[in-house]
Length: 324
Image (cartoon, rainbow, N blue to C red; front, side):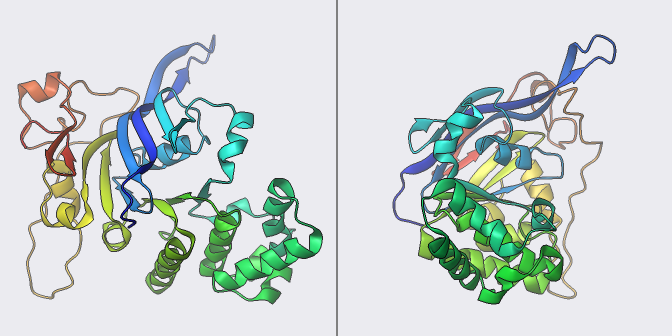
């Protein structure tokens, strides 16, 4: 991570709700609270891991930051400029600076279009390069992500999953962005390929001075790549800490339960698994008080009634829990 501690991204009390409409008059009768009051500063040059169970809102959070989902409430600042709530046309100015790597790059590729042409589109839209220079940039991109120049003439179905993800990475870095949201970027890959892609991401981060939001449910991968880790539960923030500290000394009961599920590689060493009781609450019927109180072994009456304060308990270590 860069020694520069200036935030590249400042997220304050961000909310993203999806309306539930009645089938008759199409009136909004409720909301799915996908992201609920999330606040975090992302430092320039760091990798911020974002973890939590499926459905906790981490992918929606990443998409909202990039403007792929409209902001319901709150503030998102990129390099000090407010971008939350900007129209799609207004966001074009920032598109070159913020990109995304998707879990399934094949879904965003035209099966009838050669990879070289797909990568060239960004240069056609956002630059004034001539055709020869665009072709040269595409070839350089392919080589930089570990592919070959001749791969520009191939179609998406001719590549393996790992190669397609390299293409997705090439497209993400093509316009020299500052911030990249990696949304489950390695979760669909074999373990050996995951390691290669993570190493590539690290190399590119160093050479391009990139900042990553690394969204994943794989805690082992997050521990390996992240400088800090943000834990989300039911759209809300549970804990934020430097990676080493979070994995060695988790404070929130939900974080402890998550980390207890990581398999240990040492044969014969027993490990106590914390099994949460109860079902994950419905985000369309958001619980009062602490969102985790319905499954928390430490919950008491105040937890059921009042939302815990998001507070710094140690330097750089934040948690939303009264029992810490």
